Every structure is written in structure tokens, then in C-alpha cells.
Amino acid sequence: MRLGGIGIDPVTEAEAVRRVVDALESGRGGAIVTPNVDIAAAVRRDPDLRALVLEADLVVADGAPLVWASRLAGDPLPARVAGSDLVWSLSAAASERGLRVALLGGTPDGAARPTERAAEVLESRYPGLKVVGAWCPPMGFDRDASQWSALVDRVTAAAPDLVYVGLGFPKQERVMSRLRPAAPTAWFLGCGASVDFIAGYRRRAPKWMQRTGTEWLFRMCSEPRRLASRYLRVGVPEVCRLFAEAVRSRR
Image (cartoon, rainbow, N blue to C red; front, side):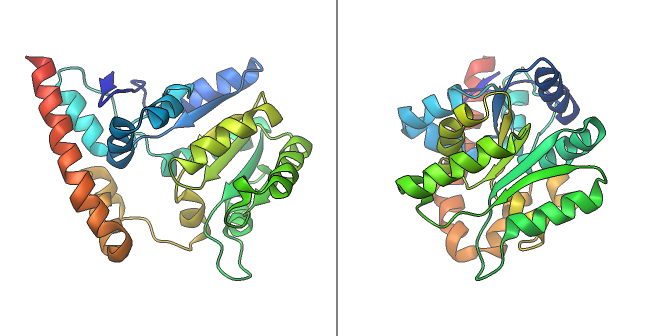
């Protein structure tokens, strides 16, 4: 299903997990990108970002408006598949199969490391889960040769099967693309703020807001200075464009 120049795989969350597990059992690595309205708008403006999304092996609709637009177009996606949900369902599958998980990213808070806290939460939730890395590198690590080299060494030594990269789009997708040679049989998931959500450093919207597609409103009210202008200036016009394109496509 194509929306806003992005090809989106028509899968449910369970089907996405099954694809990843099947690929891992076959020795094939990959990357998952979870576009929302913000990413759709960025991809529309920047061909380089579009190429970054297109190189992913699995692209799922994180934003509810993408699902609504697909219905308007007459080619409905089966469900929203949020990166913040995939980290849990993939971890559940990993614990059952003895897969190795690593976490990269999160928002540093003084001496606190959200990746380490998130690892503890996941291991507590899923007994038997093997968390082999929890890295929260400083700002600019991807532009510092020595820090980047050290990260590559850590990933290579850990040999993870799944890597959750929570650095925000497009940084996390660029990092994933560069790191894949260090773990060629692993699957990388770009998961945004999920590491902070798991660690409890940020609150995710209530379940009813997730189900009704109003999670963006909760996030905007939680971080108005950072998100209000972006959502209203970029998000609303992009949703209107997506819906208009969907209607034209159906006609």
C-alpha cells in the first residue's frame, strides 16, 4: 500500500512479529521502519529520507491517520502497528525462542541511563529474555569516529538478534543502516521514544487514546513547547494531503 510516497506493508502486529521470527530462523537480518504522519511529511520533502525508508525490509504504519487514509483509498491496511507496541511483542517472542536483544538510545538524564532501566523492565516482564546490550551513547556519538567505533565493537561482540534503536527519525534509521554490517543477521527496529516509555521516563498515552488515534494529542499536551508547533504546522496539513491523495486515488 503506497501512501505519501511510502510503501507500507499490510500486516498486523502479530504478522510483523512472525515475519521477523521467520527471517531470524532462516538466518536473514533486516530493519523495520515505523512511519507516522511526521515521517510521511519529511519523506515528501526530502528524497534522501525517502530512500532511507525504502531500504527498510519491513515498513509498518505507526500513525493512525495512515490507516485511515488507506481506508479512504479503498485499500485498507489491517491495523496500526506502533513501534512502541512492537518492542513488547518482539521481546515476548524473543523470550520464548531464546533470542538475544539489545537496546540503543533513550534520553540521557544525568547519571541515569534509560536503556539500562528498560532492559531491567523487559527482563522482569519476560523471564528468560536475554538482553545482551543496553547502550545510551552521548549526543553526537554518530559523528565521533572513536565513539562510533566503540559502539560497532560492542554490537559485534554482543551478537544480538534484535536491536531496538530509540533515537528518533531520521537519526535512528541512519544509525541502523550503518550498524547493520556489524550484526548482519540481526533485525533492527526504529522505535522512537519507546526506550523511555519502557523505562518509565516518559508516559505513553492511555490505551483508549492509542486505540482511537489520538495518542498524538496526549504527546503534544505532554511536551507542548517541543511538539505543538510541529504537530499543528506540519502534522495537520500532512494529514489533509494524505486524505486528499487517498480520495483521488480511489476515484
